[in-house]
Length: 371
Image (cartoon, rainbow, N blue to C red; front, side, top):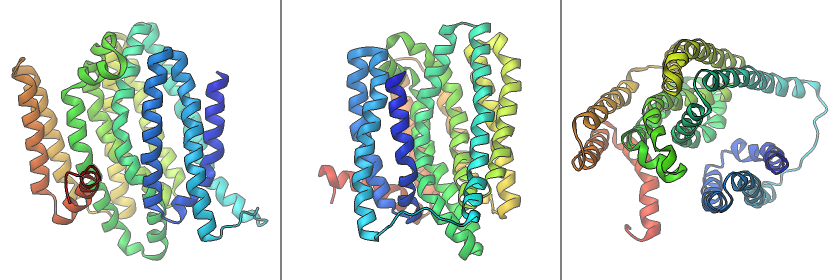
């Protein structure tokens, strides 16, 4: 517990200073930080967990936090020197009230959601077993890896949205709907890969004893897909300073999740809780889309293509898994996912293809496979 606490404290201390990167819209520096920390944390976590099991997992949180803090401090030092930033405590009370107005609803969200998560997990353990809870937890952790995509889009989005909302409010709606559309398109292929081969990834990351968590993953992946798109709206809410609205939207999800969990967990166990998670995010997504429409006057028609493509693709992958057995199942699933990716390219605009293809192109150049 002490080691985990050290990692948490280090991360918390560094976080406020990292807002400098967001405030100056230093997307390149933020991307460099994320790539570097991933290159450090992934192998270290794998080595420590493989060597010392649960104790290694706890130790990994501290080791990774210290390594990430070192990387962040190096980047921040460069930015602070080049921008000639001087840290000082403001004396005007209005500044503190503004910060509290931003932070209070975020804190309230955590205080409201955390007990509900504790209650539903306890319900699953009581009505099912700790094995069922472990299966669900592994499936949720595996599915949640998909959220790195909207996070990569949303973190630099906050200062851009804030600037547009203040200086160019007429440009905000078209910019934001384009961002949502690109985020939705970006989520479809990796979601399908995880949806199609959950047992493989569960075995790879958590061992063969938890391979059966893959069935729960198939229920959670569509939920995380919807949650990912909703989270981009959440970053937009943060950028426009409407944090109390964000609290209300999160409470809608939490309330729906709690009610549905009490309905489905007694009979469905881990599958029941996963179904509650999916349906609650379907409710949340509907409310978030309606909120975006009426608050920001977004034209939602551009979202039809990625949402329709995603829904159809999930259905085709599920049917393929049902009607095709080994050795045909894997190549057919791979073919379906490839067709979906090709369909995305045909549906997307030239600019969207360039935006989503640029990171891949840079990676291929880096490894020497392209020019």
